[in-house]
Length: 233
Image (cartoon, rainbow, N blue to C red):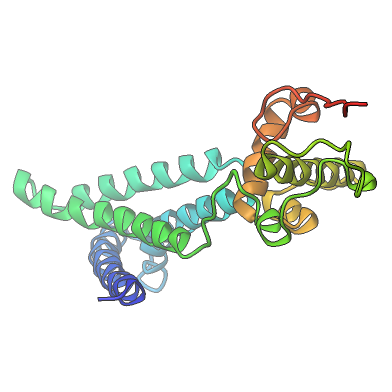
């Protein structure tokens, strides 16, 4: 079985399970809304609002992770409405422990299957080594002294991959500063496009720049203080 076949088969299975969980939870919440004297014409909106918020919040977490931004609020929203859905399903169940467990499983399964879909969506994205920018792999390592080619006194790069990484990091930092100067909110995807590196690498550097911009401005690709190499005379 190929990797693509495995992915689509598992994705289809997760979608079926998510649809089943939503249907079961929807029925319990819909009946609870009717029992609470919500107008029958509007009672269907109650389960959509509860379980729909869970799905949207979890998808927002995925979008925030891709953009390299904080996702605390959507996570909190997903947790709050997940607990509410479980509580309302249990409230609709008969006063028996087994019955309450049966009704609680539907919203729990909905949350877990939606999270599985998020993970599978993330797996479909290219995941290159975050320490090796895409542009550097394609273009090759940058020379340590590009303006002194042909000079036999130019020292050879000890680690070409590290030199390429430092050059890519400098491009991302320049793009980050340019976006801040323009009054924009930098994102990992935006920095990656501007600097010609992978989105994952752009997101990682964005997190470092936000955490400690002073250190980021004076560090190399490994996160250590940058050093200047003086060529021998």
